[in-house]
Length: 142
Length: 142
DNA sequence: TCGATTTATATAACACGTTAAATATTAACG
DNA sequence: CGTTAATATTTAACGTGTTATATAAATCGA
View 1 (tube, rainbow over the protein chains, first blue to last red):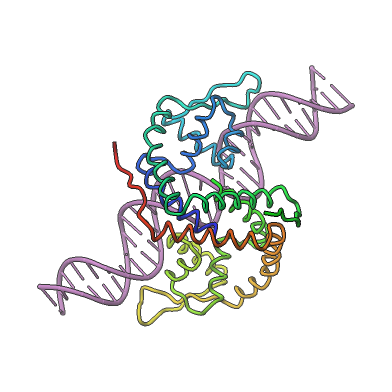
View 2 (view 1 turned 180 degrees about the horizontal axis):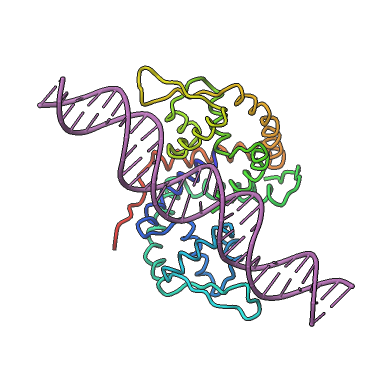
């Protein structure tokens, strides 16, 4: 599968960086998502980072043990928790972010900006088309 | 990640079919690869189906237990085995293949033949470009 | 208010990806 | 030859994806 190989090629670039800091790719996605606001619910995080709830549950447990995130209670709904990133978490992100950005820059340089943009668009369209279209036989003109 | 979501959207179409026959996506890829010739080595299969050797080892064990594949010895190199598909394996493929092809046809119909071709080309180019290009960013300490 | 259904999250079981190490066989060198 | 290095495959450990189920709290209905 072409998607599989492409994803593998891309992640092969980033995994070593994250691995050096004992982070998995998914844990990284969760941490990144937590920087965009404060006080997420688990379900929101799962959607934002495209991680299934069972996995997210394990990830949050691991990150909490390392004090990279913390949970607070939400008074309105006791079965949800407000999850936020800690100072240590932000520090870790600050440490890794430059490497991550350099990886993206290398990919962009190697593949070309406009081709990358086209690829992004096609991928997004494919995903949208397959998820909410029950049987969408019509194709947008482009 | 766009690649992740796209792949997830695509596989969501095929997983139910395979699951109904107690096959995982990877087991399906291995079986399919085995139909192209007779007597593969494990390493060849791993490359063909883009599956890591540790995973392939487990998959072959499972498929062998279900008598979908069989192993023979290679006289030239005793540490390798000649792996081939059995009649049951071919029968299972014949059972699933129509559904699989229908899934592909639906995706092609929904997304458009032309866009799909472009996407394939871009994905392949990206993978090639990143694989034989420069090496990944190094993960050093700071 | 009580009970049933829905919603949010967690846990369990199994399979795969990754990394690392182990095992076994072949090849290479002294 | 025998010892060492290289190759092919397997196993182990850990984390994650998927599916199914469990738990808990909120909501709805009688």
